[in-house]
Image 1 (cartoon, rainbow, N blue to C red):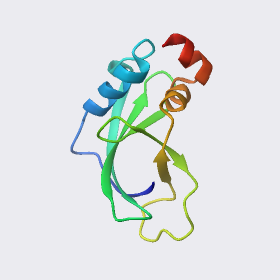
Image 2: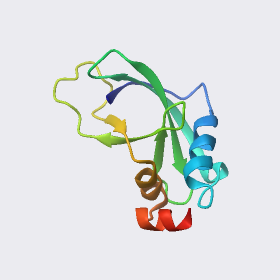
Image 3: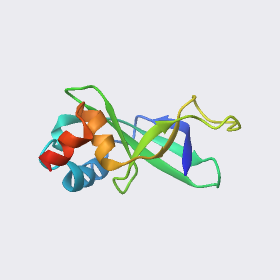
Image 4: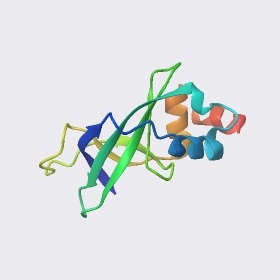
Length: 118
């Protein structure tokens, strides 16, 4: 499922549960929540069905790269935006990402390095 941004919310956070859950499952040996800054909540809507949810954006303090998670700790990555997505805020679109690849990108490591550290 592909989501497009509807708006950002900088007032409601921080919300740490998704990051804590993600790191407990995928990154325990590599990163801790205190290695991240909560940046915002992003309200998104799917482009193929009317599903609305909120993503949390966290920035790694060392690499300055973002990790985008839904409320369950599932990672999302930026993808090409479908051409017919009117009403979205900005050009970004997001789809579910492989957790190892998402963590590797945020920590500036290869997926192989992530697997070896697990």
